[in-house]
Length: 252
Image (cartoon, rainbow, N blue to C red; front, side, top):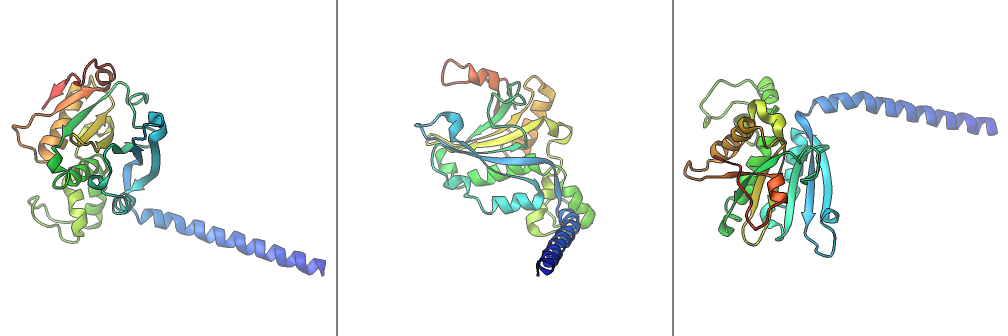
């Protein structure tokens, strides 16, 4: 009897090992079925609870590394325009925390756009999606053009074979060009006096890279008028400011 029980247990263990092996064999195909981003990214959420320390209000939500997982996440979280005042979303490369003190942020700064109150329900979500898409989806369009070749067309024309939700990726691919490594992340602040969206870069003294990023993501990609001036603030200046205003280092 004991011998038969032992044999049955061994069979179950062997079946379990075979099942796990089959699952591992399937994993690469599942991974290859998705389209990897250039970097792994992390979404953070901040809720201003004055009874807690600032860092205690910051919470890591999830991490992702494929285009599909980005869209799944975006479609299942609350829109920024629906967040309560005092809340933030931060989307940063994995390994970088959304705070000035992080070693990869402390020498950098941010391009900042401030929206009027009435823009929250008309333009805020659009600007935020365009900003994070530009930061995230550097290589996504290459994978789609490889899978779904399309003729070179004017930007407003459709590319045959691409789902409509992916055509945006063709337009924003390589948004920061050779300066993509300079981008650390993006932050959206929901505030009663006016919401803010910022792109954080790692080196404030890299004037060429910083101004290229600011001009491309805001002036061109977001479709802002040339008459609209936006400023870049170094984190070091923001951290040591003596008034409500922070010195602007660059303007485009």
